[in-house]
Figure 1 (cartoon, rainbow, N blue to C red):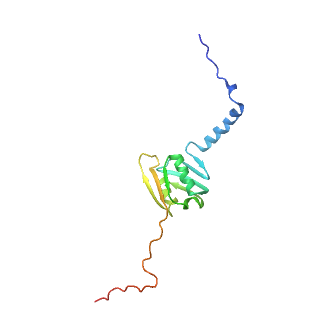
Figure 2: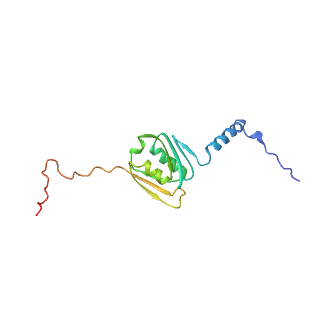
Figure 3: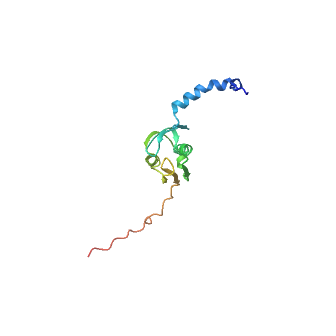
Length: 149
């Protein structure tokens, strides 16, 4: 007959065992749906309906990176504007509505998908387009409309 062996806790270093209660407490406080990264906190169970994003002195690019890490949303950023300015704000709502508010001063496109729990598959951000040519040459006489009959 074989004897059942007892677990050998003496093989686990005591410093690891001492840190377990702290790790468990942090996990319980944050919950499985919260993500903290570079001043960005994302919390919510169903991002397609309701999500809370708190930003504390972080660039918008850090928010997009956190969304990528948490939900796997592909972010294609061709703009250099997002990395410079740091913002502090709290946004609540569906992810598409939050993105509309967050990116309102950017040239962007949101690719939606029912496959992803967020309802968003990809975020495309383009660089600002250069200004077009002037509508008229400075100093040139204005064209007058033809006289009324």
